[in-house]
Length: 288
Image (tube, rainbow, N blue to C red; front, side, top):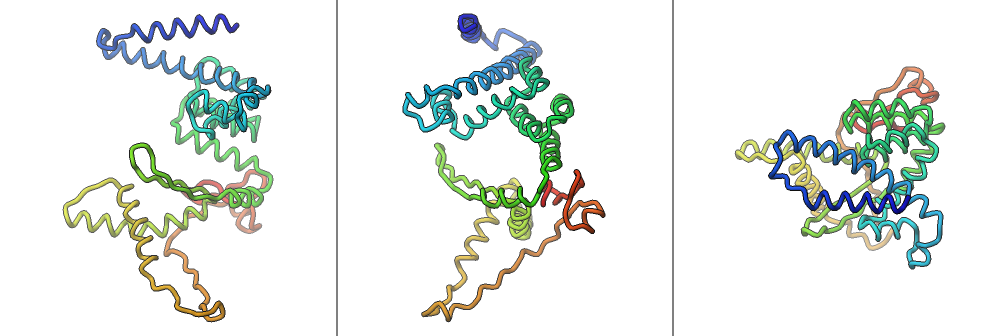
C-alpha cells in the first residue's frame, strides 16, 4: 500500500510541475479546480486516518515531542491546535462509517469534516442529516446545524456552560506581517454582553464617519470602538484610598442592550430546556 501511495505522490507532483494555467481556458480551469478540490479533500481524509494511527505508536516520544499533536504539527507545518483537531477527526471517523465513506470520495472539505464529525460524535444518528447539509448548504448553515445537534444532544446544558466558562480565555499576539491580533472565547451570553457594549460606540463612529464623508468596513469601526472603550476605561481616575477598607465597592453596570431569546413556552416556564427543546440567544446559538 505504501509503495502505491509513493507512486501516487510522484504522479501528482509531476503533473503539478508540468501544469501551466495559461494553456487552458477559464472553463477548463474551473474543472481543474473541481478535480483538485476532490483530491485535496480525499488526501485530507487519508492524512487524518494516517495521523490517528501513527499517534497510537510512540515514535513521537522518540523524536522528543511532548505529544502526538506536537509531532504532527512539526511534520505538517501547522499549529498544534490544528494538528490536534486532525487527530480527533481521524479518531472519530473510525465510528462514523457514512461520513468516512463520503470523506474518502473527496466530498467533504477538511473544514466540513471537522464540523460534522464533531457533531456526529455527540449524536451518531445525525450522520445522514449532516452529510445532506454539507452537500447542499453553505458552511454557515452547516455550522448552525452542527451547533444545534450538539446542543440538543447535551443532557445538561448547565454543565456545558460551566465547562465553557472554565475554558474562557483572551490572548493577543503580533503576526508575521506586524499585525496585532486578538482572540477571545467564552460563553455566548458573555460574548453578547461584550458586543453589546461595543455596539453603540460602533454606531456612533459609523455615523461620524459618514458625516465626514469617510466610508470604511463595519469591522474597522468595531475595532475603533474597542479601542475607544479601552481608552475611556483608562481615563477614569483610580480611587485614592489608602487602605482596603476605604476602597468603595465597584458598581457593575450592564451595557444598554436588547437581547433576543428564542425559547419554547414549556422551557420558559420550567426554567431550563430538556428533550431537545429550543433555547437560543439569537445570533449566539444555544445557551443554558
